[in-house]
Image (cartoon, rainbow, N blue to C red):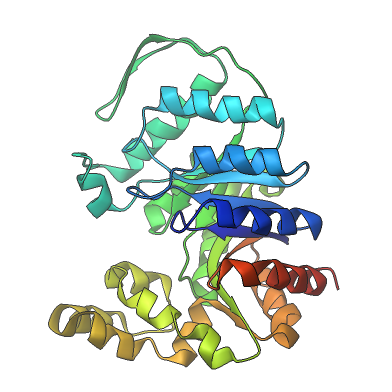
Length: 323
C-alpha cells in the first residue's frame, strides 16, 4: 500500500513546505493538495512542492468544472507535467455544492457532468481538437499542444453511481475522509466488480482513501479536534461514509434539531477512531495494516496537528510503514 500525505487547502502554504520535504526524505509516496474554494487552489502549491522535491508524486485534489474550464485545467496540469514528467496526478469531483453555489454554479446531473468533465480533460491533455458543448462548458476549436506525459485522472466519489463511474472513466477512485473500514471494503468490492464487467485491469486502477490522522502519545488530546470537525460536515454524507459506525437517521435528526453541538455528542471517541486514523506511535504499524487490509492501493493522511510537529510524525509513519 502506498502512503501519502494530504493537505486540506486551509492554513499557510509556506509552513507546509518542510512537511513536503520530510515526506520526500523519509520515502513516502505522494503529496495530495486539496483545492478549497475561498482558500488555496491546488495548482500553485503543487508547483511549489515540485520545486522543493525531486522524487515524490504530487497530486491535485478537488478539481472541478465548477471552478475551471477543463481547457484551462488541462493547460495547468500539462505545465506541471512538463516540470516533473510522470509525477503529476489529479482527482476530480463535483465539489461542495454550497461552495459551488458561491461561484454562481450548480451541477444538476452529477454522473453525466463528471463523465463529460473527465473525458474532455483527458482528450484536451492528449492534444485533440476540441469542438463540443456540454451544459457546464463548451469547446469551440480548442487544441492544446501537450507539454509532458498526460497525468492520470482519479474520480472522487461517495455514492454508488459515482463509484461505478470511477471504474468506467477514471484511472482511479478517491474515497473521502470520514469513511469507515466497512464502507471502504464495500467500495473496493464494488469497483472491482465494475472493472471486471468492463474488462479493465485492476492492477492499473488505483484506489486511494483519504483519512484525517492524529498521532500522539496522549491519544485523547490528539483526537479531540476531530469530533468538532465532523460536526461541521453535512451529516447525511458523513453518516453514509461512516457505515456500521453511526445511526444515519439519528445523526441527521440531531443535526436538524440540535445543530453542531448535538452532533458533537454523537461523534464520541470510539466512533472517531473508526472513521479516522488515530494512533499512538506504537500503534502506527497496526493502524496502517488495518487500512491495507481493506484492499486500497493508497492511504493519504491529512495530519491534524501543528505543522512543526508533522515532520516527526512523518518520520514515525515511514518507519512503521517500512517495517
